[in-house]
Amino acid sequence: MQNSWINSVVFYHIYPRSFKDSNSDGIGDLNGIIEKLDYLKDLGVGGIWLSPVYKSPMVDFGYDISDYYVIDSIFGNLEDFKLLIGKAHQKNIKIIMDFVPNHTSDKHPLFLKSSASKDSPWRDYYIWHEPKKNGHPPNNWLSVFGGSAWEWDKQTGEYYLHSFLKEQPDLNWRNPVVRKLMFQVLKFWLDLGVDGFRVDAIHHLYKDKLLRNNPKNPSFKPGKDDPFDEFTPLYIKWQPEMFEETANLCHFINKYKDKFVVTEVYGEIYQLMKFYQACSKKLPKKKQGCIAFCPFNLQLISLPWKASAYKTFIDEYDATLCNGELPNYVLGNHDRSRIATRIGTLQARVAAIMLLTLRGVPFIYYGDEIGMKDVTIPKKMVFDPFEKNIPGKGLGRDPERTPMQWDNKPHAGFSKVTPWLPVSGDFKKFNVSSELKDKKSILSLYKKLIHLRNNSEVLQEGKYYSLPVSTDIFAYIRAGETGKLLVVLNFSAKKQTINFKNFAKGKMLINSYLDTKHEKIVDLNKLILQGNEGYVFAV
Image 1 (cartoon, one colour):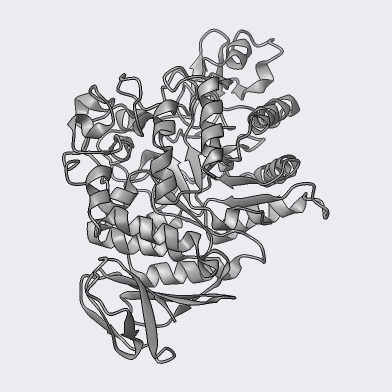
Image 2 (tube, rainbow, N blue to C red):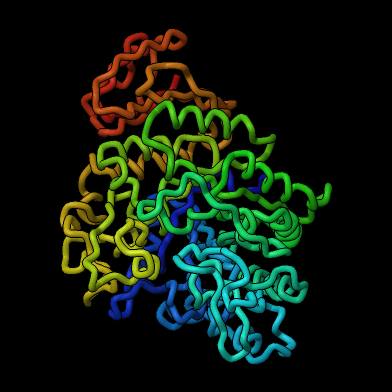
């Protein structure tokens, strides 16, 4: 399950609204991304994952799609997208798109036709159901964004299902025509030259045929927990048919050469393994192309920042993967608080070493490489419907979606006008321009790590195994045909002394502080780590 480029690529996740504004409307766009391709090339990035740029009313900022074949005008047009693909490919940078199959916008032509009448030939393209005798929704299913997952349609006298916002009606994937239409969308963009997809919310794709009530969650704390957690979502997602659809997806994309697919799924290791198995199921023995596939491993975002927790999870995850299956790691994304906010600026440097030296495909969220943090958003400036629907619980996603900090000029060089979200107050310190000049900045650390990985057979192809050391230390070996690397990460702020009995000396390749005073050849029988310090050694 490997292809010619995936083992060597470092992905960079761009939230297009917030990356670079090229036309002074306060919103990032495709030409802004094109403008910054040289920056990404210099950083060492080999692939870009774009959050949605399709035509959309932007109620959920692109995840409510009204036309899958059109680029929204705030980002540019199809010619701009073709130009982005062409220029990125010239720099050996791949482009993968967000594919949103679970739902459309309520402004999509198919939903407008489906909601026209009960007798509409398009009615079954979405999930409709009559009310209970008392007029209430068909069951107790909840929306991720708050409230019932069912919305009453006065015109036709039925409810329609929406796993997210009411403006995002769920498609009926049990309808074969719907499945065919969605695979046509994939074909259009693959034929245009994209290198793959990140598939949004795949575990929501199918719902229980009988529409059974979800069971009560006994550990739910009213007023404290996310309201969605009141019920265990046993029947509104995680239906077994999604694995069959994963197999169909891999089979379809295998018709193209050297494509990559990653599916969004927040799940346990055993659940992730089912996706791998499903993808392998329908691939022919003699493949025409060569697909690389993995379900997103998002566990590192939610694990407590403890060396023991990371060692335990990564050991199990890596050991459970079968030969040829691609591991992957991510520390942040457009839906979760930034890594520097969660664990602090110094530990974010330690996390960078871990992300870029583990076995598998790493994903960097834009701005993490310069140490960007969440930004406090005043109530009057909140855009995210999640925060508007469920205020005050820290569920809003605006804080991690603020404009990229390019320099110390007004609006951090993101735009010539006031951006759609406020820029961080620390942008004069944490910005690309300043950090490129600072040889010890976190950006310099990311560049050094990525370039080490890009030129290391050991990091690209080597095996992983951890070492039993102090509870505050996560240490592991990457072993390949050309040598071995030892990675040592201090998850604490305390000085640590470690004795690696099997390694007498090590050549220091990278130190998280980028401290040039350190000796290049280090005695590993008595390795002293400062607080918040990480190393990569050749051994």
